[in-house]
Length: 269
Image (cartoon, rainbow, N blue to C red; front, side, top):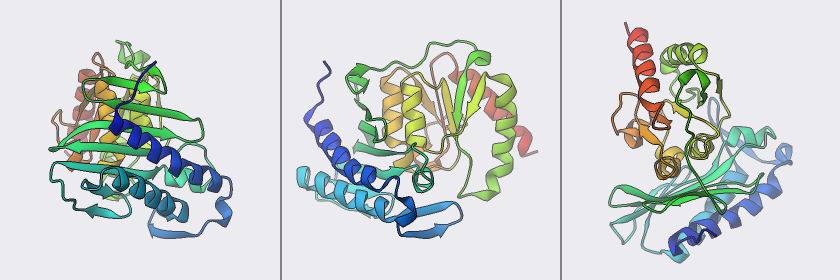
């Protein structure tokens, strides 16, 4: 049986406590108070309530750690070495429309490096978790990225740009390249879960543009600990600042990266 470290237990307890409220509100989306932040970008009372719960639990257990939350932004801590990076409800649009595909994402950053990550899906009771050097797990089962070697056999996840409409042409160029070359492309609307699915071998790869640190921090750790590879779309390591990300198993990362780079080159000519 897999044994979580004390810090992962803190993360798991915070996620489980917040998930109780999310499950209660899910299915009653018509009664939620919803404010529009921007086109295709919503915040619900459930989202804010989950954030407050997680923040309370994390700061109680590690009071000096800095915080970076999707809604609440950044909060400095007395400990300059550690920071929680949290999305209390990734897949908010799914949640608000009654689509049961959303999650809580919590990562711990130490000295600028992600060292622990947890992604919890309340509707399926699936907890993906991992720690640097200790592997990645789904509940009690060890995770491994898929072993597929051929791009044509691969199922790839993606996400469509919604904040930066100017990049739609670039994205469509990459989609046009990947769709005919693979076994299929899926867009589920929760990047943290998409990355967890790469770690679990459900997806063979995933790419998206313009994500935020709280969307990807935990998932990146999971993919790496499951034996997968993470880069930005140019093959570098700017994911946390650029928000552009490609995750895949070790056989498919290079061919997918080459495909995406060629598509982006053609889109900018």
